[in-house]
Every structure is written in structure tokens, then in C-alpha cells.
Image 1: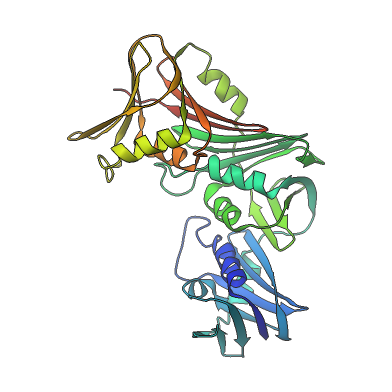
Image 2: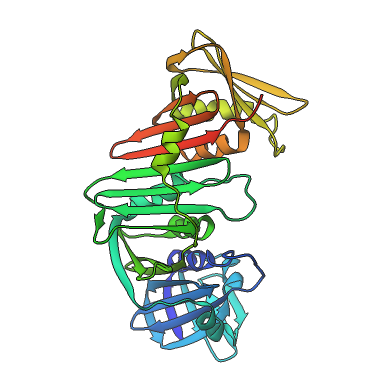
Length: 371
């Protein structure tokens, strides 16, 4: 096979299919990948433990063919401009105008991809959604947490409604979008692992995502014109976020204030040197009875404190809101800097931050920890 394409398209395709590498419980230095050149399109395929990704890139077909390679090798390349992929029986050469890479052929890659991928048949189209909306969900509603490995993502589609929610044992991040651009043929909800979905959403392009599912709900397909992701669903009880919110906010709102995203980001940066390497660092929002707010990060030995400029601050009494620093920092880092955030404390037990992006809503809920 021989094929020419833009280097940026090829690199993006490799990054997309490599998202499957860390899926499941194991990871190694090999990720089988099939490259197929035909009809003006180069197709890359990879699979692991039932998850299967297909990525297509346009270009100039010089010779048809198919070859197996290790996608981990391809990820290390530095390519610019245009790239030529030229494969023989024993090796594959990938070169731009200045650099040439010769890689060994992986003879078992094609059979391994076929063995590892799950079912791709009997998938019914259930919904269509603007790509940017689902990318927003993956950006705003998922974040690094203290959970080692993957954590769950709940996704809901119903008439004019989309919800993307990342949940672990101490907090959740949720993105809600209500708009007629969410076109739903059949309502659906499913649970996936965050790592694979978030990595694919980072690379995905195109205007519209098509969401499909197997009749038994065991496989979800997320597609664009140039990509297909088949993702096994996780067989767990689906949690009602409406009930979670209702329980968390059923008591009294004892503190509330508004703050610009950039102001909170900058304040977090100012106190970051304390506890930067401490996994147990605490973040404290200290609120006076008059509504003045100070942000403080601390470890057992060190403390940093910075004043926060807020609006409409109200507090039942002077209080301190204490949460895990890592949780709050990761959520705020993903949140839009130009938007105002509403921060609330309910019964001194839960911290809730909401960002209204009509017709979207970013919602963060975290369990407070003891002072």
C-alpha cells in the first residue's frame, strides 16, 4: 500500500485510535492497528476488550493495500506538512519532506483487532447532537479525581435534552444542554468509562455526532463522517442526577456568592504553591458573616491565603467550606474563564458550583470534608 495525506490529519488519526490503548484494566507497549488504503481514503482501526475505533482520513491513493502496525510506535513520530505512508510485506515507511521512519510490520495486528473488537452489527441510530455540545460535556463534566484508574460517565439523551455526567465517590461534574438541536429518535441513557470517551472527544471533528446503540444496550456507537467509536457500556445502576441534586440541596443554603471564572482561577493559581505535590491538600473558602470571601490552600505544615472578589455574597454566619483541593482545581480549570460561577454551600455539607450557559448548564457538586 502507498498513500499520501496531510501530516496533521495522520497524527490526529493516530491519537484518536490510541485512545483505546488504556481501555480496561491493562496497558502495555503494544496496541495493534490496521492501516488500509483504498478509494482515496486511509482507514486506521484499533480495538481492545470490546472497544473498537475506526478513523478515516482523505488523501491521494498511490497503491491499495492493508498492513498491521503497532500504534504506540506511530505515536512517537514528529511529522509536518505532507506525509507518505509506504508499506511492503516486511516494513512500513512513513516520511515527510525531512524525516523518514521505518517500522516493522506487526503480523498479528489484523487478527488481534478482529478478535478484540465487539459486535458492530445491529446498531440503531438513536440521536444526533452538535459535536461541540458533546465535546463541551467531555470538557466541563469530567476532570481528574482521586480515583485511581477510570471512573464512570453517565450520558442521557431524550427529546431536546442531553446530559453528560462524570461521577466518583466524592463529587460529580455535570453538563446539561436543552435545545432542539438535540434530535432524539429513541431516548437512551448509558454508562461508559471516562478515559476512552474523553480522549476521543478531544480529537473528534465534524459538525454532528450520531449516537447509536445495540438493541440490548451493550454497545454504543458514536460516529462522525470520518470516525466510528464502538464502546461497551458498563452494567451498573444508572443514578438519577435529579435525585442527587434534590438530596444535596434539600436543606438550607447557608452560603452563596458569585465569582468570575477568571477571578477564581487566578486565586487558585496564587495559592497553588502550597500543597502542589500533596495529594491530601485541602482547599478552604473562608466566608465572613458580612460576605467577604478568602480562598486558602493548606497542608499540615503550610498555608497560602488570597482574597477573592465576589458579588452578591450572603452567609448565614461566618463559616469555612472545606473540599479536596484537587477536585476543585480540576473542575475550575475546565470551566469557562469568562463566565460567572455561582457558589453555594448546603447545610455545611455540600459544595455546589453552577455556570449558566444558556441553553447549557455546568454543574459541580462536591462533598465537603471535616475541618
